[in-house]
Length: 111
Image (tube, rainbow, N blue to C red; front, side, top):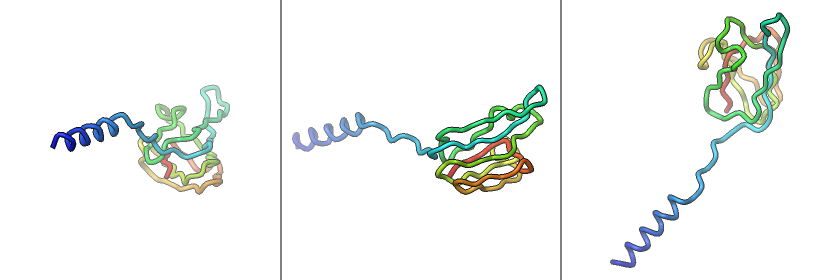
């Protein structure tokens, strides 16, 4: 009985001390264009974005403007949304996919 208790305790300790698996992420960079406050265009990037979580694009999150011209240079499919918090109309871009300036977006989620 004592040996079993020691074995269970050792197993629990080993499990508690084992490193946690990192969150999954897409490998690569997702880029997009966005209007700047001075009338120009800026480029935003998400490098190795987390998978399975909604990402609001910081440059357009709190503005009336939207980002556009997305380019998906990651190894995951990305679904982009017209609203923040992955709401509104959506469109998916496969790895290596691009879209024109007509595709507006404010948030994205990677597979």
